[in-house]
Length: 464
Figure 1: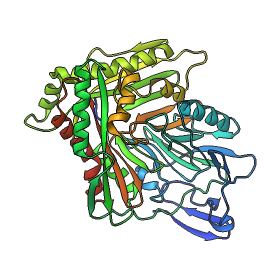
Figure 2 (figure 1 turned 135 degrees about the vertical axis):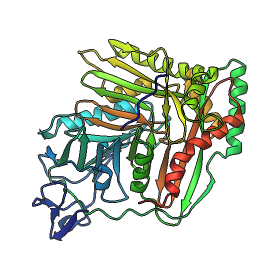
Figure 3 (figure 1 turned 90 degrees about the horizontal axis):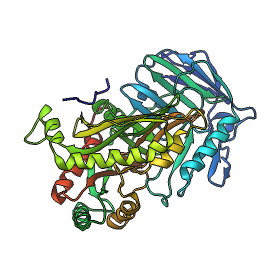
Figure 4 (figure 1 turned 60 degrees about the vertical axis):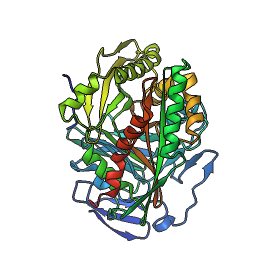
């Protein structure tokens, strides 16, 4: 049986508008960097807002420099504060960022294209000194998009500082006058956690699943993905870094992320674009520990006609939308089990090649394939409106594309699963399941509960 492989404090002193940075990890210990916005000589500076674009005050001739640094070992340990943490990390590699140079809040059905055009235009005006030249270097924007076309809240954030690591090579990317490294504030667990129903209760979710099954048995559609939410309330403000560290430790084979308050660890990669090639990991079909254990879970999942049917619908959905954009597309005939800490999924990796002339950028690819049947359903035109009608809630950025993009249109976008939206001392957790005609409402409720454990266990942990 083939199995999807598993992934393998600075101090500062402030004088006027200058911060002197001292670090033990190779970030130019004698460097002198201008103070970040709101500190030193720029205290109280207002950030002008131009429609839906926010641009921090910056000197003319803005430049970006990427240079090699000593390996920081643990990227997530570098995030200086619980607010504004930006991260995309898997198996110790990835990107973390902080500070903000510019922001876009695109909306509507054209939000991906709008974001793509804005980012291309912004990046084209920069003076770039990239001394490293590996994926993830140079100007980077972190992105997080809403699931639904009409929902507000999508974000494209350009950080002042990005630290990256890839296969033992580490680098720092800074905008001119970027502020460099900052003192890292302590990470504290949130303390006791209380739970309450979100916009859709467990009972309401069960009823929604039952209604979806009824409609599918009447032949209205083949699959729909329904979700519900759960509120977690704590005494102390929630720290994105606490959740990130716990999720990355428990789920090294997943992509741990944090963008604009949405924190999670997704096992599903919507799209990677790099050097003219694209790659996607599709998940559909789930089992969790029960009478079967260990390798038996994967065997049981592979032997489930219901789960294999659900998975094939998701694969076909991605292939049908991606194929017109590729010159080659390789789709596996059979899925393989992906074993995680809390559940096991059926997974398939799809690979393709883009044309050499006018290839689609990462965000243009996202516009074409989102939402796939893995998070929406099929046919899309029927499933997506049914989600709105049966859930009766705004998913926000849950199940939307999240990740990063570079100045060449390359990057990675996952699907925002196993996540929570943080707001002070309240977190909104989400979990969803693919529903087909053979689905059992009670089983789907238990599956959603098993998926919620990913964030709940970390939130309740006292580890720092």
